[in-house]
Every structure is written in structure tokens, then in C-alpha cells.
Image 1 (cartoon, rainbow, N blue to C red):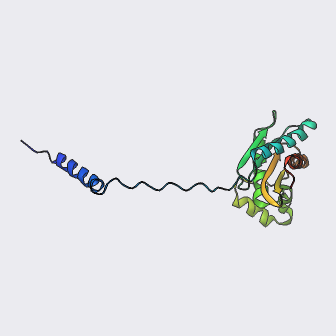
Image 2: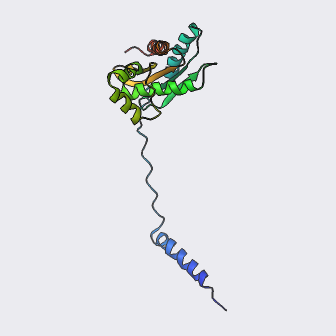
Image 3: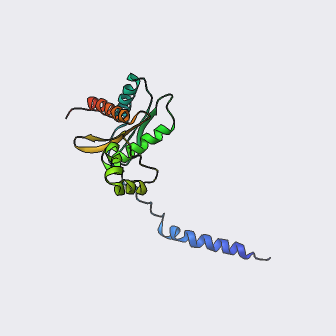
Length: 180
């Protein structure tokens, strides 16, 4: 009877792989992963929606349309809304304003002035964050109890109205936040 060498090789491989388990008992189980210690969100969804609702109320009172977005301290979107009839590009512009406001910790109106006062800094900010920051008025950092918690960005209105709509949203947020 002819012997098949591949059968012997397979049997030997199985022995090498499983012999330690047979000799020493079951393989140890890996330790469980530690509990997540992620920080609490810097701004809640309810707060973000209140800001956006305040900005939309401002726009509706003036019979205009716009887009608004709220980001957290990492510049990640918490909530956004685009009113009917506003260009889809405005949500992208609003996000660029909010991202710039939170990353630079100042209004985009102030950042936009850099093109006149400090063009080197203005263009450096743009070069370091290509396609992410939109440095015209309408982005406002959100400060709670002296701590940066996010930013709001508004786009689709005249620049001064973008700023006013963002501030109207911030005022709505202040009214709904618990007093400390």
C-alpha cells in the first residue's frame, strides 16, 4: 500500500499546532479591553440644534434662507441644517467657517481681516488647511463657562447677516443652557 506524503505532512502540522494545547490545557483567554474613557462631548446635540434653530428663526424673520452648522472642539459636525431654497454649497461654506472659528479660536470675521493686516498669516492658515477653512464672516466660536466647546457657522446671507444669524443662534443656546 502506497503512502501519501501530504497526509503525513498534514498530520504532523496538526500535531505541532495543537500539541501545546493538549499538553498544557486550554490556551489562555485574552484580557478584556479596558472601559472607554472618552471625554464627554463638548457640545450636545440638543445644544447644537438650539443654536441652529435660533439662527433659522433669525433668517425666517427676515424672509431669507441660509445654512447653519455646529461643530465640536475637534471641528467635527454635531448638527447641520440647510433651509429650503438655499444653495447646497452653503452647507460647505458654513462648515468651513465653523471649522476655522473653532480651530483658530476666533471669529471668521476677525480671521478675514488678516488678508489686509497680516497676509502672511492669512495665506499660511489657508495653506495649512486646504479646503477646510473659509475665512469670511459667519463663523463664531462657542464658549461655555470660559471654555471653548465648539463653533457655529452660517452661510447664504450677506456677510453681516451670517454673523448676526450665528449670534442669534448663540443667544438661543445661552437661554437654554442651565445657569451656573
